[in-house]
Length: 150
Ligand SMILES: [Zn+2]
Ligand SMILES: [Zn+2]
Image 1: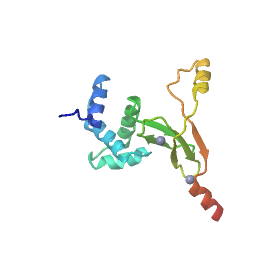
Image 2: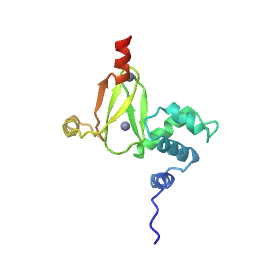
Image 3: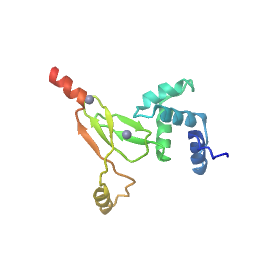
Image 4: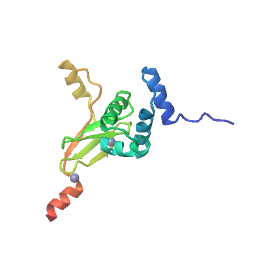
C-alpha cells in the first residue's frame, strides 16, 4: 500500500513562502537546504560558503536577509552570543543553550526551563513576547582546560 511520503524541506518551504505571499527563489530553497543539511549551529559566513557552491556569486547580505526571512517563517532560530556574534540554529524543538564567552562555542541544553514568569513580566511592561530562552554563559570545557595549562 502506498503511504504518504513526508514533505521534503523544499516542499515545506515552498508552502510557507506561498502562504506568506513571498517568492519561491532558488536562493531561499538552497540556503534552507544548506541549513537542514548542516544540522548544527552555524554562522552566516559558513552558510554563505556552502551555498555558494550551488549559487555562484551569492553575497553575504543576501544570506543574512534570507536567514532572517527563514527565521520569520519559523524555520530557524537566531542565537546571539556573548561574543557579539550570531549563530543560526536549524533545530526547532524547544531547547536552551550554553555559550562560551571566549571561543563562542554554543551547545544545546535539553532541559525544561520555566520561562513563563519572564514572559509575564515582559507583558506587564508592555512587551509582546514571541518566545524566551535560557542561555548559560561561561567558559566551555576546552577553554577552561587551556586556561589552566596556559
Ligand atoms: Zn570555549
Ligand atoms: Zn541549539
